[in-house]
Length: 306
Image (cartoon, rainbow, N blue to C red; front, side):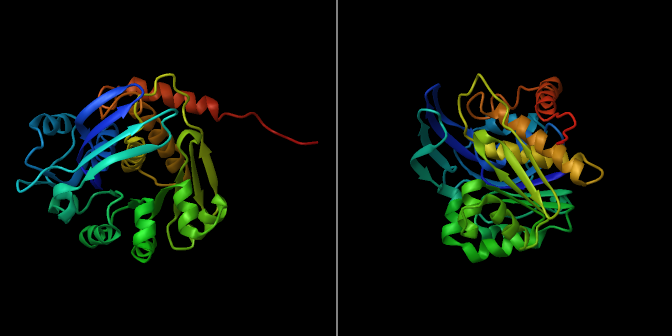
């Protein structure tokens, strides 16, 4: 097991201008693990309820996802989110959030997971992220995700998490909010001062940026003609990134740049259908084709100014 992903497994009810799904498989750990499975062997730590259909378990196992860490709490139901998108679908509108058994979730890391090469802390409570770190044994890379809710409600706990991880993955608005600035580069530098080696900033349809103490790199989003549901795109990006890092022998700047491309490619496929439907169908050839698009988009001949 190469990648440990701790987060949510959920059932989502979603409406977009392109269709509707009811109680479809979702959650940060789900999207992340399915994306990571294209490069490495992931295991998830999450909780589901008595209503979790066996077909979802089969789907994850068929993708090579280890479910030893998936807790089944028969006292209640699985985390359920209901929401919708309108217009350009850049914003999700929530109808209801029923945490159900996820409300009392406490991550227990199986022994077989504790030596995972890459650990992904999904956007769960910072106190739970810290609990995960207490249970793992010297991973090569620890990546954490977060959200504005924790920035508002648990800023000091979140700051402690940031001090203990290698990579912070955050969106542009959240980075600026946490650091109290309107400048994204300034926010990235402030986050780097807390201790991580890299800050990866998700910028939605504008792509992704990566900051380190001595380098900067950015990739555009892949232009798509088919765009049905953006749910899980950020988690798929993170899973693709983590999966690629897990298979990289040397974790240098080039490895991280390629990992960003892997995450960008997986996120681009995620949005083409609801739930994980598109992610489970793609092939190595599909991934390579879109990686080639990114390579061409970022190729530049020599530039000189006279």
